[in-house]
Image (cartoon, rainbow, N blue to C red):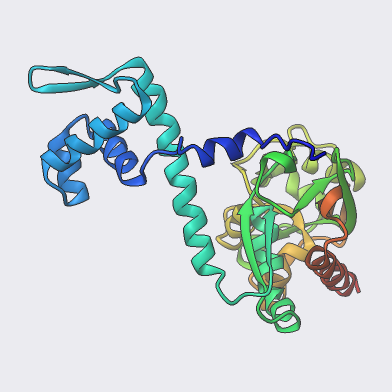
Length: 312
């Protein structure tokens, strides 16, 4: 006796034609956005009559009114307003998926990576050529995330995380400790007459907003009692702090590996060889279900080797 197979609900929806015509959805979305059939017709390069017919077809298939017609105006109904929001989101996702499918034609895998902005632009991206050389045909897409997120709700395979190796449902791999050094431009140091750590107590201190106590910790480590180590202009990213220091605005306390190029070129110099090791570190984080996926594992092996080389 054959057992009856009950189809999935989504499968039933697809089989029974519950999905409206895309052209009708485009006509509805444009009309809802412009609150005008004529402007929607102009955008879609159709006649007003064609747009009106497509909306009527959509309303007939749904069995609801999406617009109220009042004299020369059309206004979304409550159902229409809700539906317009969902349709706009769905069309946007469909357009994005289509663009990605075209862009990935001929590739050998895709890695979607969330990065911290300064780590990504100053350290990771300049080294990516070696990863691509070792993995031809692979595509890496970069996005920015500043705080931990739910991998199940975000389109990422891995992330660069700063802090403690704690991320629910994910595997953390240590990359680099954060060793911070006080830096400034040579011209600023000469102008301000900075000869000893105590001289910084009267200087402009460049603050990084996510490390509000860094200067206080550094002053304590060198035995300087400073009245207000949290004074000075505040920046959201280390890249901004580094650029402000290069520009001669003040002294910055930044991770050494993020300003290696400026130090080598002489645009910045280390004020005093007294680094501050913060309590956090940089980690590569992968959701547990993807931790052993081949491409994720390849990227993890590569970045671990790169960060090991950076520590030497």
